[in-house]
Image (tube, rainbow, N blue to C red; front, side):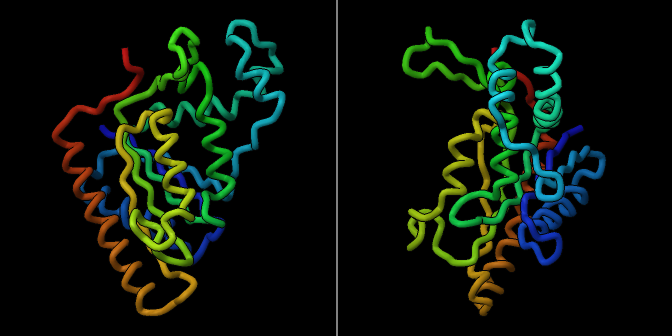
Length: 226
């Protein structure tokens, strides 16, 4: 059985393009593989707490030396990381806000990219002391933007700080590959937007079908590299 972790981060509960694209992806996956398990988390409705000085102190204290208070501080982070560890597919439904990701998604990332849980740190590795501890996952990013041209080669590619951020951090989440689907032109509301949304819906369903079929032909890979 494959486990999928779905994370919604749009502040909109209704008329959210990314939630709608996520629904399309999930419905198609469930048609292909109804036996699989879904973990769903609405980061906008229940945003993780931003990391604090107490959180940093607790995270960087060896687990065997943490006080009861420090262990309590890390309980929400532990829960989020447990969900991440269980997942074979990570589905991020994230609109672009001010050229970047929603703050709730950033808070989730800050809570799950954690020393001793998702990465190790060893100065013996020289200038690259961090090493990911998870592997074998795939990540899907379904995103939307008010303007257009954010894809590589587009007129606003340099303004896209969402996809590059996710791409830069994905290996700490155990994701060997990132699949990106975009819907654009939302602020224009014209035929270009309708076409972009239609293409994104079709692409999300096609990707779900492709990954579901591929998942059925290989054993899931989880855990830490040896």
